[in-house]
Image 1 (cartoon, rainbow, N blue to C red):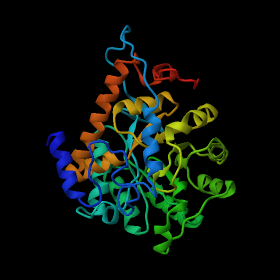
Image 2: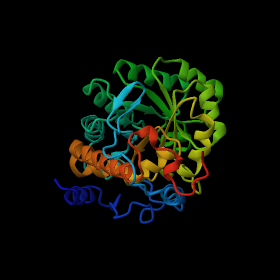
Image 3: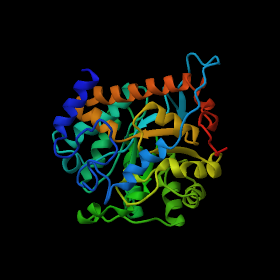
Length: 342
């Protein structure tokens, strides 16, 4: 299936929930939740793309970076490139339900692994969402990472135990999910966490622990103090609070403070390989894809997810050639035009 056919199939399967726009910028779907839009005015969604767009790159072609090496390590596992699939759930009410939750997350986890990288799975008001993700991870011999909603601590720990049993690479919590009303409406309330509560979660497992949804330096410091192995700089795809900055706006300050303390992953507005390059240059160690993965999964299952990831990696490699980066560690602020971040 070629790229045009994949997008056309995804558009058909997502009809009424996502238009698979030529530019996925959140304008056509603003405020459409359920659906794939950003909350309220949609500005938080749009700002993810706007923040990335504000950065320009320095074209460099007098160098020896002719065949860049994209390989990197995340939690001790080597992957072919620093691009992973973000945790996504809610096929039935956000994506039209043309495929089941199990089919969707199996496509994400299997497609990611076959592309040489890692897929994440999520949690939701229906307990089947999380269990489907764990089953998909188990099928792939543990090659995946479950991210849990910020439920009561004993409920989070119960799900961590399930992740351990299924052999997951790491486990985490999307702390920004504390604002999800849908969870409460399903009788499963979520909540913010104190430092002490976060420490309890981190210390409850030997798996690397990820705190997803960090948008300020002070909360990044709290995650580090709690012993987190990684944070994800993310505004939850613009779906939690309106009028938030884009991830690329806040990433440099967070990275400047915490780069040596833990792994920094970022997401939000990534549509092309050059977006990955920009986030890496701003201090991320890895990047998550969200909405493009949905297009891949709804367009052609695991093969579609694989195609999306490999297309992104090819674009990243080309961007590295044209900015003079022979390996991932050479993607620094020097690739960005007039960048003040050091």
